[in-house]
Image (cartoon, rainbow, N blue to C red; front, side, top):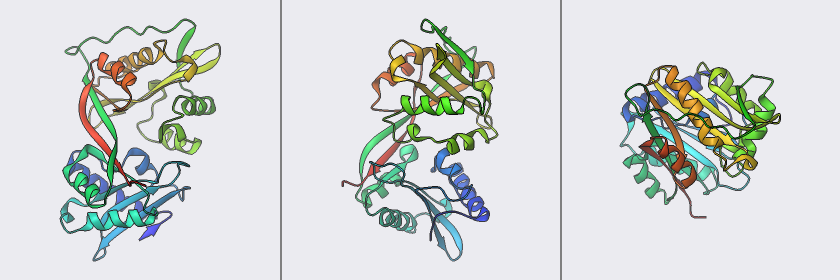
Length: 295
């Protein structure tokens, strides 16, 4: 079944399936953005695929066709109790057909079953997203003092007043990023409405009244993890150490909040960012893989 939007009951069932799979797999098969897109009515370019067996929801797939250049991106998950029955292949083939046989598929955590499914569907690996972690607190290596470039000041985000400026800065900083750079006001509103949102952990760097960089942190209370949610610097302000300084400011905030571990995501083909994070003591914890059709 392919739908442009889910009912509240369907969305709740899908979230339950995702949570049950995450408990088994140790990683979440559908990203935060994908989970946010389950609710709130139809969204341009988003389709939901529900796979049922005897009336029971056994699989979910989401297809996002919002990039004007890249192939549609997909995520999928099969209920852990119903695996090994061909459901993954069936759902993958349905996503492939719905995309017009031009698709990009995430395999979060790089699990062997997901890699096998990609092979069965004839997909090839083309992107690697690394999750890095480092310890915080008294037993960890001390965090560096933030060294801001001349003329730069830092304050925290004010919802409503800073939305437009942040969206513009985010789009500029991630102009070549397939997901982050495309965030809209609705995407920002979705995140601000979440229980984890805290403007005190959302830092903005300004110079001469212009927003030139930011570090948005996120606390995962249940897991006791502090996330470097997103760090961005406008192109004209890059190369002067602002990104490293903002990262250090956010990490100090997470440490002060009592988080014992910090984590973040970074593309494997971004050596500059990897060098900054590894210099701050981060190491690879796990890897997400993205596969795509050849054409």
